Length: 407
Ligand code: HEM
Image (cartoon, rainbow, N blue to C red; front, side, top):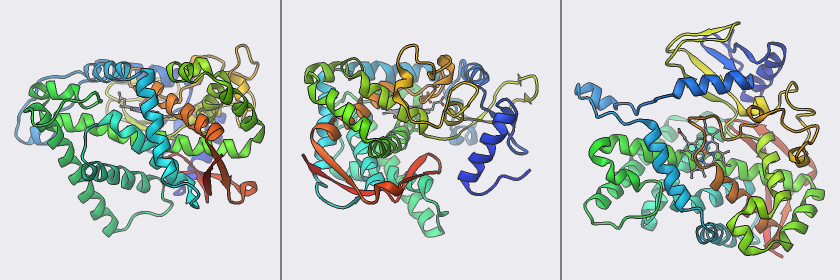
C-alpha cells in the first residue's frame, strides 16, 4: 500500500482505519501505527528504558567510543533547571518578553500563525539558550523558523531553499558550540538555561553530543509551542462564549497568584488550554524506531522497525472520548461524562520516559497568552466566519490574518 501524498488525506485515512482496526495496524509497508493508548504507553516505556546518547557518525568513522551518557541524565539536568526557572519572577519575565514582541506589531495586519510562532519562540529562547548577542539570537531564530516553515509549508522546498536551510543550520550550530566553549573557558558567563548543565558535562559528552542535546531543546521550542499558540488563538476566535468566560476569570485573577501557579489561580483558562491541546496536539505524528521486539497480538515489531505514535489520533478516538471532535473545555471538569477515560487517553506532551520536559512551562506560556488576550489586547481577525484548520506536521490555521490592538 502506498501513502497518500497530502498529509490531510493521509491522516484522515489512518483515522478511519484506526477506528476499524482497534488502533494497531500497518499504515504502509514499513510503519506500524500504534494508536491504541495503552499500547502507545507500553511501547514508549519499554523502547526508551535505559536509552543511551548515541555516538555521533564522526565517532563511528574514527572508530572512537564516547563515554556512555544515559538520556535520563540529560532529562534530569533539564528538569532541574526548569524547576529552578519555575518561579513567579521567571514566569513574569517570560510574559514581559511575550508582551514586548506583540507590542512591536500592534495595529499591524499580520499572519497570526507567524506572529504566535514568533512570540512563542522568541519569548522561550532565553529559557533554552540565554545570553546571546542579538546577531547570535537572530541566527538561531532564523534556523528554527526555516525548520518550521519546511514543516508547515504546503509546498515542497526547492534546491535553493534547501541549501539556504543547511547553511543557516550550520551557522546556528556554530553559535551553540561557541556559547558552550566560551562558558566552559570562562569567556562567557554561566546562565540559568537548559544548555548550561552541559557545560560541566562537556568532558564526558564531547562537543558534538552536547550540540545534539542543545539542538533537541531548540527544535522542541521552535515547533509545538508556536503551533499550539496559533491553535489557541483559533479556538479563542471561534468561541466568543469562552472568550467571555476567560475574560471574566482572568480580569479578576490575583496577578501574584497567577504568576505563582496559573493552573490553580485560573482553572477555567487551564481547561481551555487543555482542550486546545487535546483537539490540536502538535506534532500530529511521531515517527519512532524500535530497539526491541514487541508483540501486540495482531502485529509484531522487530528491532529496527519503524512505528508511528499520535497524540492527535488518541485524542480523536471515539472509543475513549465522547464526541471527540467537539470543542468543550468543560470535559476536563472532575467527573465530566465526556472527560478522559483514563490518563493514557490524554497525552499532548507524549509518553514517559521521553515525555516533553517543557510541559509545565509550555502550559504557563499558553495561559499567559490567554491572559494577554483577555486583559491587554483586542484581537480582530479577517473573515472569522470562514476559518479552517489545515493538518500539516501540526495543525495550522489557514489564512489566519488579523491584528492586535491595545484594549
Ligand atoms: C504547548 C507546548 C508544547 C507541546 C505541545 C510539546 C509537545 C511535545 C511532544 C509531543 C514531545 C514528544 C514526546 C514523546 O516523544 O513522547 C515533546 C518533547 C520534548 N519537548 Fe515539548 N512541547 C511543548 C513545549 C515545550 C517547551 C516549552 C520545551 C522547552 C522549554 C519543550 C521541550 C521538549 C524536549 C526537550 C523534548 C524531548 C524530550 C526527550 O527527548 O526526552 N517542549 N514535546
